[in-house]
Amino acid sequence: MMTVKEYLGQAYRLDQRINSKLEQLESLNGLATKCTSTLTGMPKNPSRSTSMVADAVAKIVDLQIEINRDIDLLVDLKCDMVRIIKSVDNAEYQTLLELRYLCFKTWEQIAVDMNYCIDNVYRIHRKAIRAVVLPKSIQ
Image (cartoon, rainbow, N blue to C red; front, side):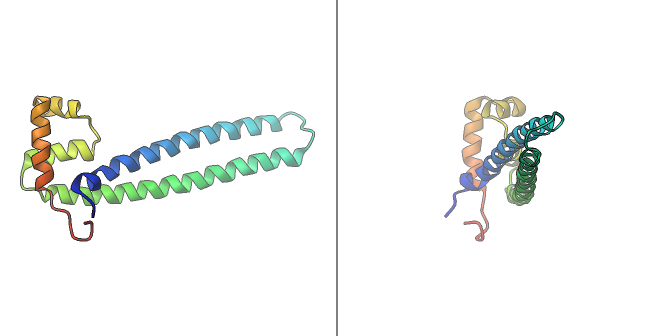
């Protein structure tokens, strides 16, 4: 059984994985560029350089597909989370939950945005979490 905080925290973790994969993609693109730059000279074994480029391109394409799949999951998850957060019958709770779990803001940023001291933000968060009701399909 998943808790409310675990459910709401999924989006942040998925966003972090997407960012990690984007960094990997950038690194692979850099490697592919290095591979193609060796092709401009006269390589000793042309088929080896071509296969290195092909391997790099294949890895890049696979990673791009994986990133797109994760982005689709994140969008779907955030849509579900918006519905759940909007079902909370308190605008202040909704705002805090949105800032934390949809915008990924820190507690300090939320305190500034909502013009509260940090202790008040924590107190409101505890109440907001208790006010969230997860659908049976998620529990």
